[in-house]
Amino acid sequence: MWWVLHVDLDQFIAAVEVLRHPELAGKPVIVGGDGDPKKRSVVATASYEAREFGVQSGMPMRTAAARCPDAVFLPSDPPAYDAVSERVMAVLREFPVVVEVLGWDEAFVGAETDDPAKLAADLQDAVWQRTALSCAVGIGDNKLRAKTATGFAKPAGIYLLTRDNWVAVMADRPTRALWGIGPKTAHKLDDLGLRTVRELALADPAGLARRFGPKMGPWYRDLARGASGTEVSATPWLAKSRSREVTFQTNVAERAELDEQVVRLARRVADDVRAEDRPAHRIGVKVRFAPFITQTRSITLPAPTSSPTDIERAALQVLDMFDHGRPVRLLGVWASFQAADG
Image 1 (tube, rainbow, N blue to C red):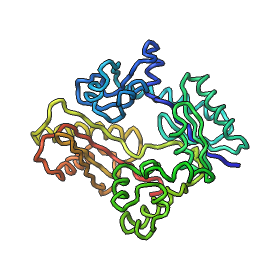
Image 2 (cartoon, rainbow, N blue to C red; image 1 turned 120 degrees about the vertical axis):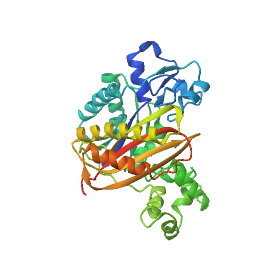
Image 3 (cartoon, one colour; image 1 turned 180 degrees about the vertical axis):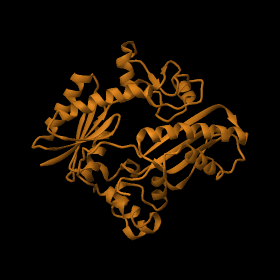
Image 4 (cartoon, one colour; image 1 turned 45 degrees about the vertical axis):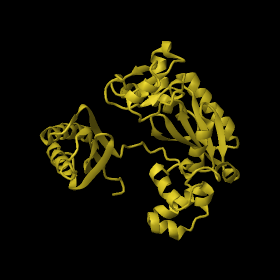
């Protein structure tokens, strides 16, 4: 039988840092920005010891420091995480399986096997023996169920979720428990009286289509029923976009300085675009106004381009689309690539 496994490395970034600094084992470790909790930056990841204090990814470093003042704060080091991730994926590919990389710390594994639990245990053991990293493995009869199962397997466990136990496990959980439904969508569903996975699974598809659109509405209902694809592709992962951002240590109110910063960020993004050897087709800007209000705007370019001049010009044009009545604490520029199928 064809099975889908979802391999998810436990506290990956923090675990890599502990491997590099063994003396940190068992201590609360928080990684983010340049490692200075007094500066404006956010948590990239936190060890399980730090999470016990309520520290979460995406949280301001200053908040994390307040919650866990005894934590060890470290700067983020993407090249190191790239290298370790590649080693892990190489271990998975040594098995007679198909590996679809989702990011640094996770991958789908497709396999024809009569004993998916044994395969999951073998994958865990191989990753541990070769990299000293632990991982959780979710097993499913499709991608959605495998991905969802991993949440019940963490840390370092194995969990099976199929059509046979989907209702028993998921029906009474909130819609936010579904992969693909974030806080905003969950809030909108709640406004419709759809608070649980069961309620969403039994919802009127026409009503969902009116609220969320003809594609997304029924798709949310399918998610609640556990429906998903089973194909695992070994096609190399390609970034959908490249972005750069800066968090100001002091809020910026002058438009001239914002223009200057956008140009700098756009040039760095243009360098990333050229390194990808794929032209950008859409340019966006993210602005976080004080105290903590984030907005994004974007435009589609007249034609795909890798030209720094075109990308800078577009970024400045997007910046004009914001209401600049408040000081800015964060600024970002991103470029997205056109899908391969056009």
